Length: 78
Image 1 (tube, rainbow, N blue to C red):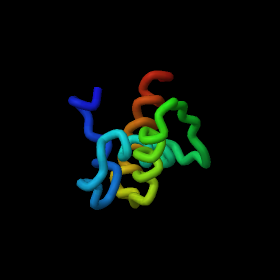
Image 2 (spheres, one colour):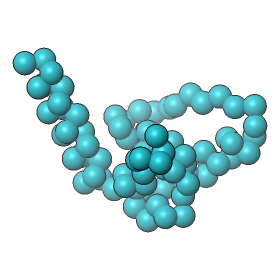
Image 3 (cartoon, rainbow, N blue to C red):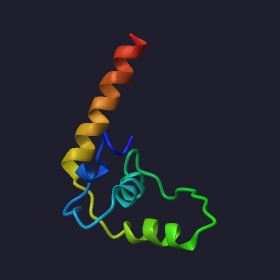
Image 4 (spheres, rainbow, N blue to C red):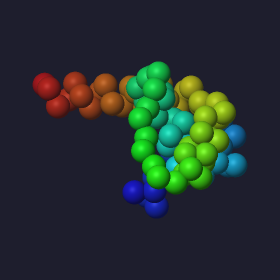
């Protein structure tokens, strides 16, 4: 999946982040949540994820994504 989609589009100045870090950081906003559960036996994987949390969200992109999801949901229930 990560070869086809780059979650960094949801974040500002995200070029310094890996795609995994960007996905983890953006997941707090798509939709907005207060916590996310992850599991790993490898501390370096957890460090990588936490390293992405300092990223700032590109609010317009997130709003557009949410709008597209709402529109799709309405189309499927109609």
